[in-house]
Amino acid sequence: MNIHEYQAKELLKSFGIPIPRGVVVHSPDEARDAAKSLGGHLFVVKAQIHAGGRGAGHYSGEPACSGVRLVKTPDEARTAAYEMLDRTLITRQTGPQGRVVRKLYIEEGCPIERELYFSMLIDRAERCIVIVASEAGGMSIEDVAEKMPDKIRKVAIDPALGLADHQSRELATRLGLHGSQIHQFAEIVRSAYTAFTTLDAALIETNPLVVLKDGSLLILDAKMAFDDNGLFRHKAILELRDPNEEDPREQEAARFGLSYVGLDGTIGCMVNGAGLAMATMDIIHEEGESPANFLDVGGGASKEKVSAAFRILLGDSRIEGVLVNIFGGIMRCDVIADAVISACREVGLHVPLVVRLAGTRVEEGMALITNSGLNVIVATDLGDAARKIVAAVRARRTA
Ligand code: ADP
Ligand code: MG
Image 1 (cartoon, protein in one colour):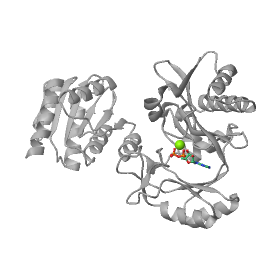
Image 2: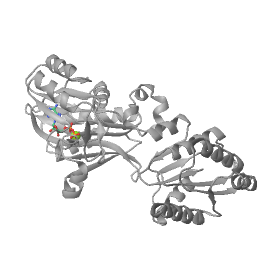
Image 3: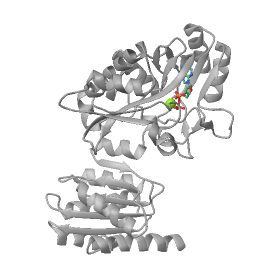
Image 4: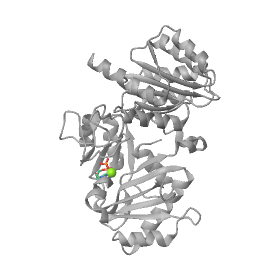
């Protein structure tokens, strides 16, 4: 689960990490009042969406207006807010469709001397939390990795020993920090590590972490993501969820306790078991098409759950075909067949459907499908199912 920049900053602040003062607003008038309350002569108006690259992004149809605007007066903050709210911001991370900006963060403008990159994440290969840092802050870390890989520093944190202060101090030196900045940096790293482990985070990314003209360190941008499996023990984090920023298909699936991940392809997959779901996605790729989702309906799913899953698949406007691939173990094939049939009747089957069933009560399940009167293509094994759905989707495209 992801959260907004202003939420990440509030959380990090509660762990003692220095951030600029700021106020979240929902209207141009609130933006002006926020700037007035902050005082000073420089304000930053920042679009709050779950995507980075806002500073280099632009509003749909307005190439000159980015998602991070520096202004000098409260009235200019009001005008900027007027130009940014309820419009679609397009950045490298939003994709071409962009995202509608519903909230802004008004922050005090800070006199920047240097911009650094600092993040903490779980490295699956290293099987531990790693720090990634760079003296090339402000730009996307993907670009740094591509153009100047030698400017990226990685430090692994031993899970048994925890973060050692000397690791942070060495890193600070390599980032070109000196004097009291080394201590400040080590404090930030220590606090970030505490926040990361306490909150079951998956990522804390600060880009930029800046050195101000007076030599002090501050976090100007923050992104946090959390491990969904740990959320049950962090009710306060769950409260930060913003449904506007999430895939509606995934939200609906979560309501029914389905394990669902929306993807960009056009073949909807309903499978039981994560391994079989992965294999099904692979074999669709092998046949030259792409899955629209990962969906594991689980072991003992009820008819309601399976129907809900099927409705989510059919409700996706991008879908061009559906592949049901079930191995009945605890799950019975006749339950699946029954649920698929009733969901098709309810929503209307407007795309080709291939069903492959195997295992417990397969004969009963197949009989239900063939006697349903629905236009279902039956497959005997996984390879056969993938070939049939791809052929059907392609035939429909050229029809
Ligand atoms: P994004 O990464 O989405 O582009 P950032 O929050 O990193 O958004 O902002 C982009 C740039 O804007 C930063 O690299 C920094 O140079 C500048 N910036 C952001 N916040 C402030 C601030 N409070 N004061 C001064 N400059 C800022
Ligand atoms: Mg940034």
